[in-house]
Image (cartoon, rainbow, N blue to C red; front, top):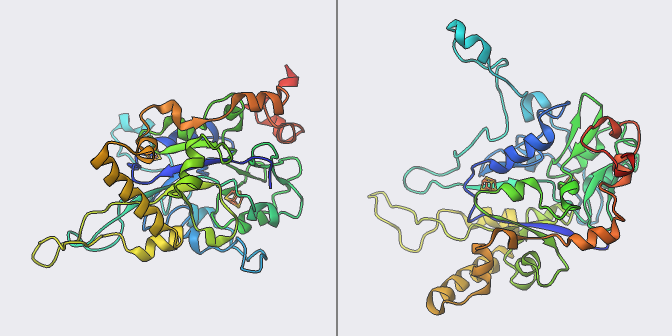
Length: 361
Ligand code: SF4
Ligand code: SF4
């Protein structure tokens, strides 16, 4: 456990699946140097196989006794999909636009497919996913090299690239499959919660750029913060697949409202809901009922009285209110260092041009 824990809350009622967060992350961190197939942030259509394909069935995490479960290392070819490019240069010669490899899978492959029958009961919703910066990380437990660590001052989970030997046990151990193998440097890499931005008081790029304003970022113990209020005070934000046992620190406000179903004659079935309760329980546990009930009753209260702190938080009138990063805390505890020294020192990480330790200047 770290002294303090940074967390993110995502309100799934507001995600429009635009992938702006995905692009913000990719252009900042993973569009080069062996990271091309990695999506530290991706947005999935649920139900769907997701990214990597069928990640929920690939093992890892902990059993009820607290022992690490066996897991699978997904294949770049079949489970992530080889990233492809297009023959833009040949278009002026009259050639058709074609991918340079035959695409077989990729992020967002099953976009908007969902489940059910149109128009009676089809449904889907979006789930954006990043590393959960877990309090009991499966990736860390699985690593025989002690190469993965959790920062004491904010709980961010990072890979020490100098210790990592590319064994990939971490990938098998993470039930969310949010740590990736970089074949170019034979190391594992993952979401770093944009810690160089966070240490400057800026939110992670995915959260800053989010068009739907669905993402709140802050310390879980900051009682005045939106993250604390959504997770602990109102209990409307829940971890994804808590049954994996890694104690994730990304929380989701579950989809609260869905259109009713239609009968065979196209008539509305009153009181019906297209999203099966079992699916929501599988993702967010039995607490999902309390969360949905609370959001609905606060919506009603707001309509009737005009007052609801919870609705004010979820509407997020002011973008800057969504992020409480406590700049001074970082100034004091990080002693002015721009990046974590264990992450930035050494021969491997110094090759990563964007991590220049401040002392080097
Ligand atoms: S989500 Fe996976 S990679 Fe991230 S901290 Fe948890 S176990 Fe590790
Ligand atoms: S930018 Fe925001 S609204 Fe758009 S897909 Fe990402 S999380 Fe959803």
